[in-house]
Image 1 (cartoon, helix red, strand yellow):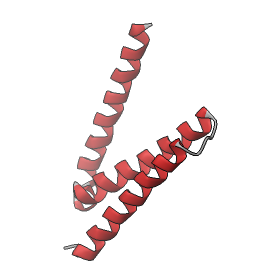
Image 2: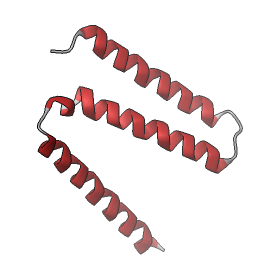
Image 3: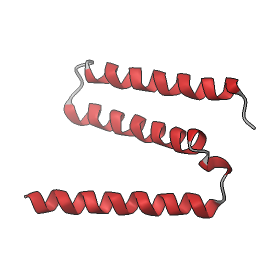
Length: 86
């Protein structure tokens, strides 16, 4: 079992990452640079949450692959919906 210290470290990492995202928003960077930084940080935060707080790190790989397939399906549906709006 993972210790409370470890979960606190993950929480602190997520907190710092969210703070950096807000800082990027107000830093005055051009749109696409800020967008890229925020997307990368959001992806890293999503991986941390899924791996440790949803305990996927200790589950069988098949369950993790199933989660990735669901994520890709949601991404495909979102992309298809965005093109249908045009």
